[in-house]
Image 1 (cartoon, rainbow, N blue to C red):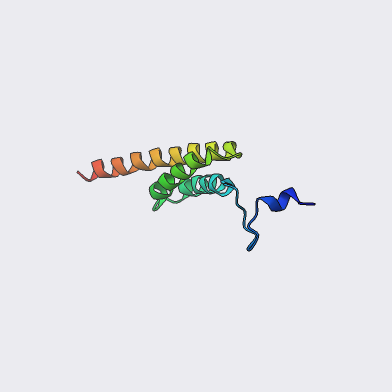
Image 2 (cartoon, rainbow, N blue to C red):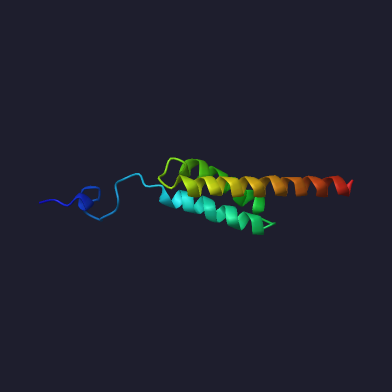
Length: 91
């Protein structure tokens, strides 16, 4: 009698053999939230969050990936505008 739970696991270490991207969607959401509140690294984390969000769209947790993409997009656009305003004001 075999368990369906153990069929998708490595027989030696017990690691999952399925292509599970739950963590990618969650990471995109977390980076989206953090990028709004981190002005110094906001643009970098927003770009990484956008990439993770697009990868996470292939996951079962599409809603988290979509919210992450939206938050990261808002943060990226806001910080790009702020940087442009700061560069224009220096001239």
